[in-house]
Length: 459
Image (cartoon, rainbow, N blue to C red; front, side, top):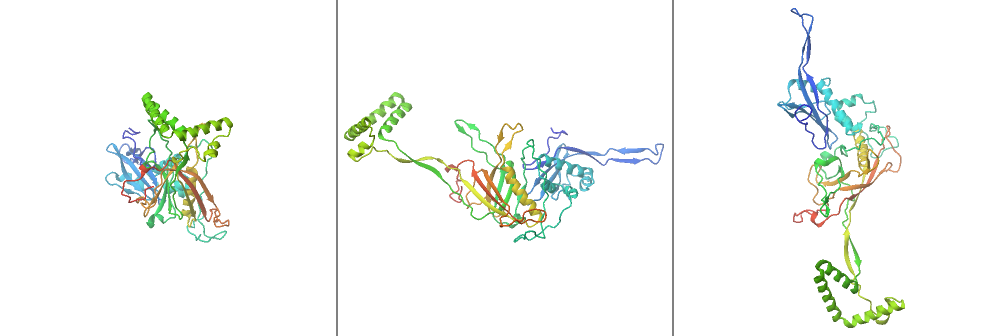
């Protein structure tokens, strides 16, 4: 029933959710000035408000925090902020005057408690400092002073541009006892991409989930939905995108003797003695029809075995070989690879933070996870890649092949893609080039294609 008897507060998928807290609002202490108790103090206890918050990083780099309170015995959304708590909008049917005053005032008890709880939840989720600063505006007030220049032309940077974006470097604890990171931000590059309505490619990260046994096989792989996405990166669709569908076929031989033996065995296994009798009858009929060929073949086989000349004796004496019954047979499916290359050149302080976070997103997401005992290594997170038609939130592109859940097999970063070493004055590289190789976790099957009268490419 939760800490305060109203169950657990809402925590939408992909959100960073705080714990539950209680804050007194309206508590007053006044001095009595008249009567026989003059000179003493009187305390009005005020009202205890129970609150919790849920924060989500948006695809455009901003954040949204919803603050919930208990009213009428249940958790209800009372306020929302999209600027880290600088301003709030309220649901007047839920939020009272005392709550509004305490939350809108940066020095208010509820405002401070909400900020503190968001920070604790972000630390628990492993959110880097530069991302955590987007959740709570007050964090930036205590950040070290740095270069405040927010723009710069990096189209052809010199070795030391005068105008630079800067990015706070997070302190990373590399001890093996760190908990695995299971929450990542939603990142968009470049800054204006979310408003441009152009087609995009979206990399959704999900926790790896193995298949389960089902009868004599395995269950189907789970469907990736918004509920199990733990972070995402949105980028423009690059040039050179392609997919290659392939299956494995190979030649196999089965000569008449092998075929007869296999037919007899299969008849016995599938039909017992009666099946063996039927197979033997069929073999006898074939032998009777080709008696002369079989006589010649057997003579050559026995003579070749006696003289050590093998099968060549049949060819030398008759110019023939035993029919190998060669046929191209299906061997199995193939797993499709996908390669992508992007050049990331930050043009502002915020874009520099986004670029660093994008590189961190892929590097950390593809890394194996050590268990606390270090006895096992768990599978890295996996990715669902989607081409979106005219911006994020739109439908998947029907005219570019879909991609199943993938593993990121390699991730390469080139720090000098222009051919010379160039940084901004705070050390951020003027340009980065990233190259990625993904491979689908399972093959594409005929049954995977949608029944849409060929209106889309499918896979």
